[in-house]
Amino acid sequence: MAKAYWIARVEVEDAETYKDYVSTAAPAFARFGAKFLARGGAVTELEGEALGRNVVIEFESAAAAKACYDSPEYQAAKAIRQRCARADMIVVEGVPS
Image (cartoon, rainbow, N blue to C red; front, side):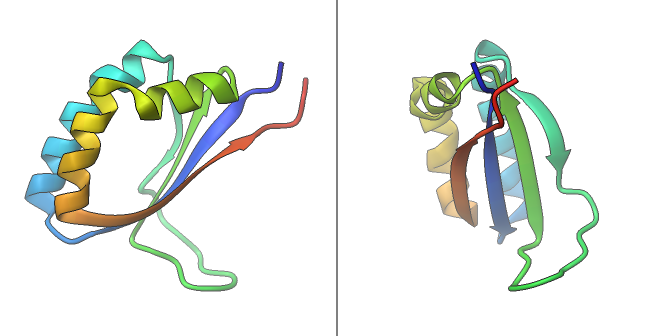
């Protein structure tokens, strides 16, 4: 089974409230075995418009990635994020191993 990845591009508009999002989302990430591969590091813009924060999170499967997003824990965090940031988020399946 191929792993899957959340890829999120985020423009944080209220950094203090975004901290609440991060702490509220943590239980969902722990529950679904999320592994952060990139989390707001330096960005080199090659094409298109880069947003301020970029995140890549690995999950064991696309089903786990989607279940994490749909979980009550993450939905509570999402409500906070939507008040303090705008984001583009996708799940992409990795190459089968």
